Amino acid sequence: MTTVDVENVIKIIQESTNILITLPEKSGADALGSALALSKTFTDIEKKNFIITKNQADKFQFLYGIETVRHTLEQEQNF
Image 1 (cartoon, rainbow, N blue to C red):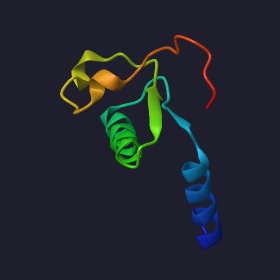
Image 2 (image 1 turned 45 degrees about the horizontal axis):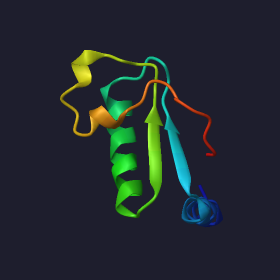
Image 3 (image 1 turned 30 degrees about the vertical axis):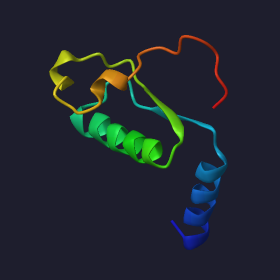
C-alpha cells in the first residue's frame, strides 16, 4: 500500500458511522482474533462496528470479546 492508499483508508474510516467486519465462513482463531482486535480499535475511536461470520465454533470461546460476534444480520443496516 502506498501512503495515499493508507490516507484514503483512514479518511473512509473517519467518515464512517457503521463498520462491518466480515470473515470467511471457515475462519480460524487467527482471523477471529484479528477481527476482534480491529473491532476493539474501532470501538476505542468511537466507531460503531459489527463482526459477522457463519463460523460458530465453540472452541473459540476463549477469545476476548467473542460474545460480540454475530452470525446473522438481524435487520438491514447501512454499512
